[in-house]
Amino acid sequence: MATIKDVAKLAGVSFKTVSRVINRELSVGEELRERVWRAIKELDYQPNISARQLRGGASFIAFIYDNPNSHYVIDMQHGILSECREQGFELLIHPVHASGGAVAEKLERLVRTSHIAGLVLTPPFSESPELITALLGQKVHFVRILSASTAPDDLGPCVFVDDFQAAFDITDYLLGLGHRRIAFLGGEMAHRSSIERLNGYKDALEKRQIPLDKQLVLEGQYSFDSGAERTHKLLQSHKPPSAIFASNDEVAAGALFAARIAGVDVPRTLSIVGFEDSPFSRQSWPKLTTAHQPNTAIAGRATRLLIEDIRRQRRDGTDETVPRNCGFSPELIVRDSTCAVIP
Image 1 (cartoon, one colour):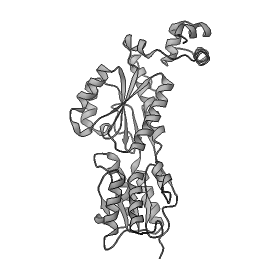
Image 2: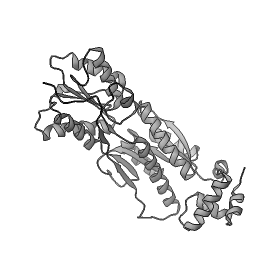
Image 3: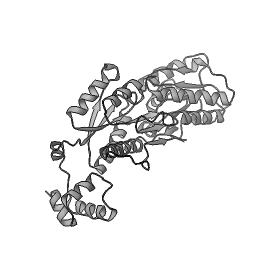
């Protein structure tokens, strides 16, 4: 296997320069960086993670989550892992039960014992002020992925997803098709996305001067079964909705299943919209109208912001040209599960 000295010899530089290039230090000029990377590629050199750990350098990024949606978790893993490989880090996947207690202590211990350079926090951890305050006190590097229209503060790098506007657009689209009785199937309220999507739904109704019917707003979980159970309840009511806005595609797939069992035609009798554009939306029949949320890209961008923040602080300096926040806006994708109200 090629060594760092082999790379240095081929590139005609010192092995310290190779190390600086691998660690993305800004002190190396562009021409030298390109020469080193060409040598790395030609020799198929792989950085020695174990040696870096023995020198005291943290080489892992930890993905922290508590989310039952397997598609969300897998997309996040792919995005984080891709950026880690690009930046010379390894990935540690670490599920944590948000209701288990002592989360801050568990994460601080993880960082201390597992060579963790930083944490990628997803909801509900990323949206917990108490946890963020504790991690800041313990000087733990982290990036937050959260639901918001703008960055909520300057406590650290974050990627925010504008669930409110996406939910507004979905509801407004259904209203534009002539639907007036639109049910909302939420997710766990511990996730800020549930609140933001509900608020977007409510705001769209208000803008069109459509009274909110609280009986059409059903809380639940981000799961197939929860979507099916709540849709069954709605369809059994004396005045069922003509459309359902499900807070994610898994819930929407459950709603579609319940409609099919009840013999309800989708979309002629009941339009259904999901959220996220997961495989559920494309593998169902009919295919689901949804909001495209690029989770892989979101995770990759968050990881890049985290690593840039780690390197900036390791240099004991600041670089105001490097952004610390980034926003994403899920976009409506119209497919076959919605149509205009049929008189």
